Amino acid sequence: MKNPTPLTVFVRCCFPLLLFLCAPVFAERTNIVLILCDDMGYSDIGCYGGEIRTPNIDRMAKEGLRFTQFYNCAKCNTTRASILTGLHPRFRAGLNRNMVTIGETLAKAGYRCALSGKWHLGRGKDQHPMERGFERYWGLLDGCCNFFNPVQRDPVFKGSRVRVFGDGRKYVKSFPEDFYMTDAITDHAVEAIRDFSKGPAPFLVHVCYTAPHYPLHARPEDIARYKERYLGGWEKLRDERYERMVSMGLVDPAWKRPEREARVGPWEKEKHKEWQALRMAVYAAMIDSMDQGIGRILKALDDSEVAEETLVLFLSDNGGCSEQFPDDKPSIEPGPKENYTACGPAWAWAQNTPFRRYKAWTQEGGVSTPLVARWPGKIKPGSLTSEVGHIIDFLPTFLEIAGASYPERHNGKSIIPVEGISLLPVLKGGTRKGHEVLCWYWGGSHAARQDSWKLVWEKTEKRWALYDLEKDRTETTDLSTKYPEKVVALKSAYEEWRQRTGAPAPRGPKKKASKK
Image (cartoon, rainbow, N blue to C red):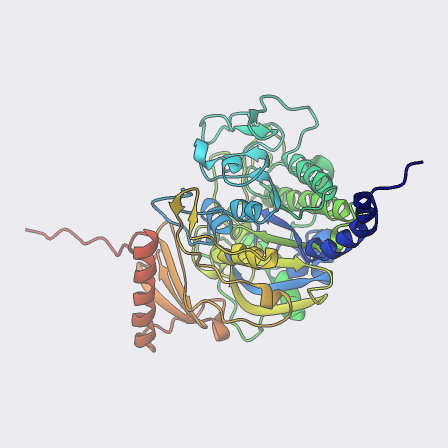
């Protein structure tokens, strides 16, 4: 055998040392799994007072942190744009090239990024996930689809077929008999986690479920679990959830309980109780199925031996949905792929316990989201925080975790300055200086929050109302006449935000034509 050269001796002696010195660089890097569900109410999951079986999300809460005052943007697409960009929605711009996404910023920081599921941010070339920082993508660019056959035309909107992309840019035109969208989204997220875990680079996997967004589609075995559960009606369900939420410390019993919404009739007068109960049973089954998928994601992290270095977050994009369609009638059964049904306002009212209103409204029922975060060794198990946060905070949080900075320019374009604030101090059990003002708009509904004060445009009454959320988070007592100076200050803050984001102004009552 030849004597080793000096270079060989150096490599043999020093290379293990170099690996040891370099290892902490990756050990300090954190993987991120951001799970977003669609149109789920504030109190649906078990760890927020719900009766739906969600053992895997509940496990995350037991091992991690729950937020009681976390906010979304009231609607599917605006929430998604804000999560990705760290910006409030730009109502005339959508997602464009003067915004940078979490995929783009984390990819630049050395992360591998994948997105599985719903995109809902446009179909143009520049709006495809793989043009915005994600090296892998499987899912639909649209807002919703048939869960059993995504390309089947729906009987309600009668629009163009949903486009499902497999392997990034290839259209999927047919699906197997046993296909179910929730399972498929999980499959591709799990595949990305397993593949990414094989290499040294950290990763981001953004899981965007379409559940429990309409249409109400679920597997029969999941529906069967809830078939009898909701025969007591929406008022009883809301009462049961409220009591559990109080006992969990999620709701202050001093807050008044809002009266039944105007669109919600009394259960005792409901003529089709079994059909109504089945609507909610299918909805619950959709969440149950999603939780099963989240269990598979957590197992993939465990099996890949990266769970201890992974931050996992779960939240909803807005409150429960009150929309109804022509097919929402007792003669049409919710659940099978042939039918296109929704829950309606009465069950949405229960889903958003204890708050008022629903998706697309800026009252707490529309903009409040459950947020569960699990990060072993960093987040204290079983903790609860009342720190106010917003989905625009995710991007700066992830950048701080990655040790990366937010760019002033990207791909030759000037970038809008980030508007979110890192949640890292809160995740680690502390506090932070939060947002001076938070504002919302969607579909004629407007709101602004500063400290505990919230100004809400009551769009059915065409007027501003003022609430003290510390004493009245359920928004039952209007204080606008008692504190007119607060109204003026918050209206001014909202107007500045509105001008900056392109949101329209509140529209007051129509003026009556004068009689000649």
